[in-house]
Length: 121
Image (cartoon, rainbow, N blue to C red; front, top):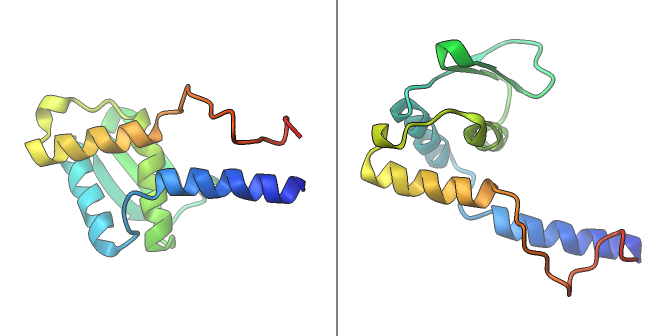
């Protein structure tokens, strides 16, 4: 039963986070968001444990160039909430999308009592 409860939680989390398709077009749009936020994305060969490295003072994100499109999108989404983004630098469409992405990345303070966790079992 533990496995089915964990699967249910994973399915719910995945459904909440998958608001878009993992396509090269989505990756390009994320790269444009970083560009408008005045960050440079570089795809380089490196020994990154997490798949990326952020050089904050230089506003550069270095991402492992061997990652797939889906992994690159996930890494950019992981990095996004940690960046110092000035919302006035973003265009109207990008600002709207940025706020949506940040809202989906923020941890939820609401708990659904109908969802069982491993601790409940």
